Image (cartoon, rainbow, N blue to C red; front, side, top):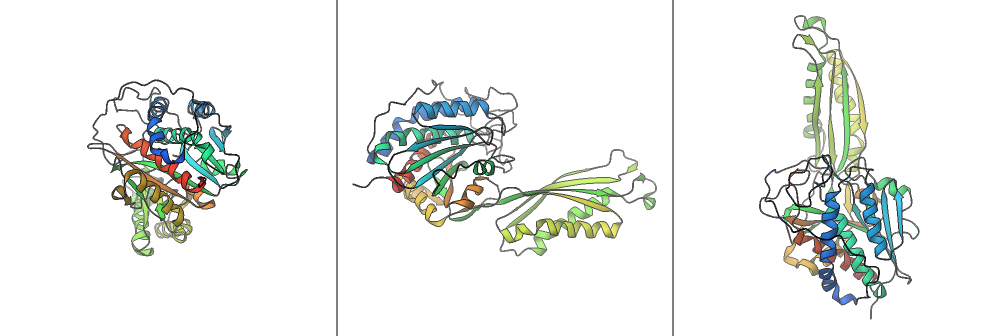
Length: 421
């Protein structure tokens, strides 16, 4: 997930070392009415997996050790496993042998280029790389879900796909995995995913139908003027000055050209110009990000930037080039699938601890799956006093919350694939 860090203070949680997960391919079948018990019995497996994966963070499309760990864990459950999807993606398949729908459960695998500062006994073994967005927890939750549902195979119908996706942070692994057929053979009927959420207390769940996370696009503008001596600005076209005027004008797209009932954000985060105190810059570059939930607003970003920057440049004697990169679409949750998550969450943590999620301008490429099949992406509270937010060197999760994610996934599958009677 791509959102800015928000807090830097942290209460450092200390955990004892754990063994590596043991093979579980000979697990007994379990009745469906004992989900919580079987989730509890899988807690050690869950935490072992989370800590092992936390030690080996890898960047987008380089998740080779991670993919090997995930594939081995799925194989130990006796599940067929497909590897190398979109480079490093992994998919396990739980086939019950009885006709029914196909559910896809998704976790992301990549880490961030951050030097870890948690002080955890299982901290990153890869310098300059860290699971600072909770993807280690997402993978562990999904592996434990696969373990529990494998126990329950005899009480299920249909198929469950356990999808481990590379490169969520950027440039995105969901679309390439879809292109390689993960939604087919058998065709997926619905999909679900979660994100650990440190701004919500551990033991709570946040879920919302409709728009949840924004579309995220990128832009970079190059201004070309005419450089010269700082003492003779009248002989020059100051690209730095043109750029600052253009940045100011761009802010008015949101404040004056977009309906205020449609949330939108334009942030210029980079500006580069000049190299000496007495030289007027001949070029300037700036760039940033665009966020919105509205597809109509999104479709006009590129046109509007060109119009605004082009107008400023024309008035001041400069020219410009725009490089526009379309990013992830908005995360839009299906109403019926959201209600399924809400019911599962209420059965897991109690109705009082299930809240309406506040939409965020952060982006997520889970959106590509939700564009193609109905589904729901939700937030699992993992916060504690003094915790740091995601994308922070001190970020970690309250591990007591992770079994809740496993139980919610299992209850969703139970509701849709359970054999009645």
